[in-house]
Length: 295
Image (tube, rainbow, N blue to C red; front, side):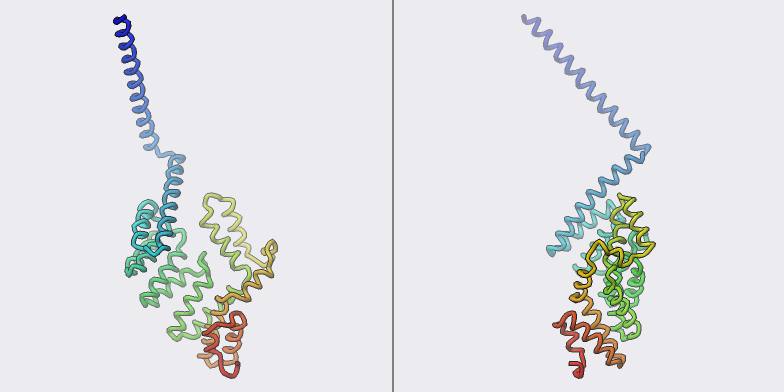
């Protein structure tokens, strides 16, 4: 009986050894195979790795954005830096990192980050240039800010914002003709009911990379031009009504009124200031700038 037990134990030990040996051999073969695959760097492996990096960095950036919004830019900075270590071309992380540095009193760091991003190449140079312009403007570097705002023209950046920035700097420098031209362009864009639809199509070119059919359709639509007929599925009257109460349009009209007042063209000044007050009756700047004869 004892001998049978001993034989059974020997057999079990032998089976265990075989299982362990086979397991180690399989693991060894797996690592060899993975090493060979990694060395050949197949397309499917690069795509898989790329998707993993994109998911991870998007999640970390979203967490950093939430922390930033809660008023903790220093903690957000470390997370944005982590994201950019993995994806150096992540425009959103570069921009937000630069803004976060500005919020901590270190605008020069933010300026360098965005300059490096432009020099190294980015899929969204207009976004980088616009935000660089803002950082430069806050430092009083107006000529450099103007140069970068101009780089953001005809990009996916909201063009009304770009022309508003340019107009404000020109007005501050008393370059009235340039200021008027910028604010006129801004007003034209704001009054165009197709503006938001056009911006949506431009955003598709960078935010829907995984869907080439959508990118192609958006590009074709932009190439042939966006017209009011494209808004037929929507309610054009609703868009028009929203424009009638848009404080941004009221502010643009106010700036034009102030510029025309400085140019000595009082009738045009009053026209734009009254238009501003029709949209936003409580607009304090428009009321202050309106001539007594127009009240």
